Image (spheres, one colour):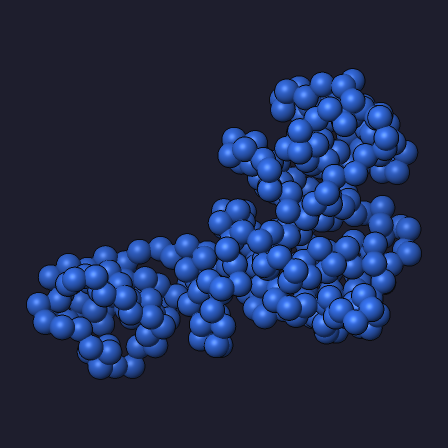
Length: 299
């Protein structure tokens, strides 16, 4: 398990990460969300052991990651800006990673390169941004590591490749308990893959929740009544948001599914439907409660 306790990182007068504490369970997919400049890349580099915290600790199974070679052998970092050796090919990068990662699966590498339609003997400098990211992802999943750190990995990938990459991550999580930590500025990119999501804002963790727990506690109801709706009609229910368009009311509320269904049904609505919430809607509801407008933080 990865743990950050009061982790802080400064660059001169800039406080990039400030006293961040978080836990990332093994075998889960952790999404790190934040606007540009929120500190996502810095925090990810601290988790990967690339940067040393100026204060606090970042550990794997209780051991500090920074300058810990055995622990780093269990991690693979995919940066936002792809870096490869000058004038090298994917096959040459494969040979390099084989020396660093004893569990590197060469047969799987060949299979994935063919599946993604990539030429292992072509110079990587001639690849597009998306193709370079595909090479990094292939090398990462073939390295056989426990932790895969991904910085804006889906950015620049077309929709088909994006889903294929998510499928690779999901398969490795299910089959061998790999733990991907994915940093992104886009909530929608992570909605269908993450188990746990943390919102990083101005260098600090604003919000960190398990998605299953969040989805169980918040619901969206669409209703039409034969009279104007007032909050007092659902007295005792924690209503987070009400939107009205003509006679249609969209109510976001916290509580059990059964409670909300029974309370609304007792009002004898003309129309009633209980809808699932998107990850973005859940975050908007939760963060507005604590005084933040996520719509201004996440684009």
